[in-house]
Amino acid sequence: MTMLTDPGDIQRYRLVVLKHMIGLEVIGMTRRGMSATQAARKEFGITKRRKIDVYFEYCRITDQEPSQRICELRAESSAKRKQAAL
Image (tube, one colour):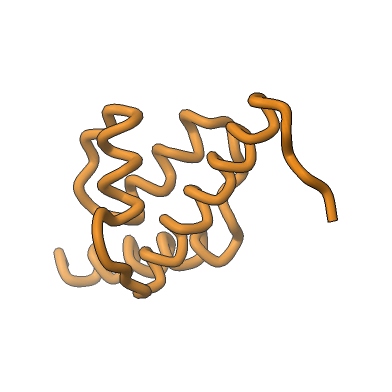
C-alpha cells in the first residue's frame, strides 16, 4: 500500500474520487450530507443541473476521461428525449 504525502498527489486522488462519486450518483446511489454533484458545482462553478451533465462538465474541467458506462447512459437518455419530442 502506498501513502500519499505530496500535496499534488493528494489533490489528484481527491479529483479522481470526486469523479467516481458523481458517477455513482448518476447511476442512482445516494449519500447523506452534501452530494458529490453539489460539491462539484460549488467548487468548480458548474451551472449544469442534471447530474449526468455535471459529470461530463467535471471531466472536461479536470481533464479526466469519462467512463464508458456513463457515456452509454448519456446516449440512451438523449435518444429517449429525442423520441419523446417526436
